[in-house]
Length: 274
Length: 158
Ligand SMILES: Cc1cc2nc3c(=O)[nH]c(=O)nc-3n(C[C@H](O)[C@H](O)[C@H](O)COP(=O)(O)OP(=O)(O)OC[C@H]3O[C@@H](n4cnc5c(N)ncnc54)[C@H](O)[C@@H]3O)c2cc1C
Ligand code: FES
Ligand code: FES
Image (cartoon, rainbow over all chains, first blue to last red; front, side, top):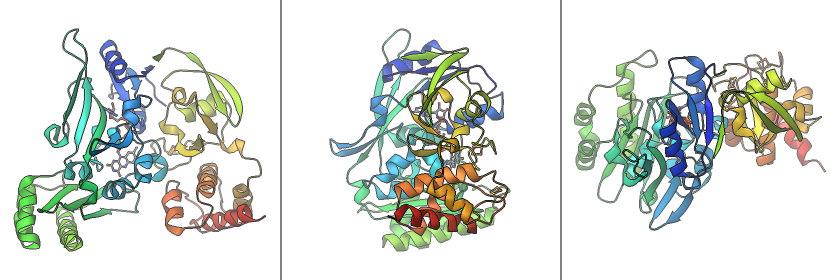
């Protein structure tokens, strides 16, 4: 049960959504609602005064190939995306997130914009050098501002969005889903659990690209690690671990165990791509 | 743009009937079903998306009703366990001892009914993927597996 009295708004367009955000202090965009509903129930500290339901905005529901890219709306559910066959690595990663019934609601945009640290759907999108289309409230009374930017330019541990900025869609260059790929995910208990480590790798023809979640409290991709793995393969593991910086250690897995998982996954991934 | 605040009356299509309820926009579908509409089949287990006891079908797809707002469901068809009447999956759960205490059973059966509808052919990987959404503390899952197989046989029978 959500104790707070909240308003519910359901805009038909992106511009209406950002306008609603401007008019309602304490508003949040509501996509799958799986995080909002559970966080608002758990603690009154989660400030929720209005939900702006973005699921009916047509631009946030696109699922099409056009203009040399695969465009995926931010409000698509993970189940909807994973049922398509356009981007196999993305499908494999999405199928690891939560459970199937939750994936029937949980959205692509929500996964990247949420508070929980894993944001696993970011991994294939970061590897593909995807772009993100957003709309944000204009300054003062100016009209909303639309921008399409490289995901990597606005992803620093998490999506860095301006106040009230709404993600509409992601655009994946069409060559990326064709690259050889590899994906490994390990949890502490059963298959349905948060990842201790999830690794996604591709070979783009010129070299290896590597992204990881769970090892840090955020998803990670860096050019330095890509360069090390492309040049020296598994021999670069000590340098890769150094470049990854401090890794997570918590009640679910020790540092040593995460390091061991990571090494095994990288070795296996390199073999898959060879 | 639709805007709702305070206490609002909504109309939900549940098990083929129109049901009216006075709700707050923040009320979850689970709470509205149980506390406003007397449909107590969907159970309140964790209210955290983990257990699946609250599973209902929304336009035929299993969803966890503790994680969605009732106001989001106004144009959708909601099916709760009260809407299944002597369904082959229900029969199979009874015949194969697919439950003990019964707390998880409404959610299990709705998920299984949607699974059998979407995948009439048995496929272990798909069955696991779907049914992992529901936890059972009693059965050890064997009776549930058997019930799923029996339900498929019943559905396939001429
Ligand atoms: C049971 C469960 C299991 C989970 N397991 C995993 C897992 O294994 N791996 C993993 O990576 N994650 C996991 N998660 C985390 C989940 O991916 C995030 O909580 C995600 O935010 C939920 O997406 P949603 O669409 O339901 O978001 P919502 O609850 O609707 O929103 C979450 C946040 O994102 C914002 N937001 C949503 N859409 C947009 C948008 N288009 N533009 C801007 N902001 C937006 C909202 O305002 C809100 O702040 C799990 C969550 C649950 C509930
Ligand atoms: S009560 Fe909804 S998943 Fe447990
Ligand atoms: S029968 Fe008791 S929880 Fe499943």
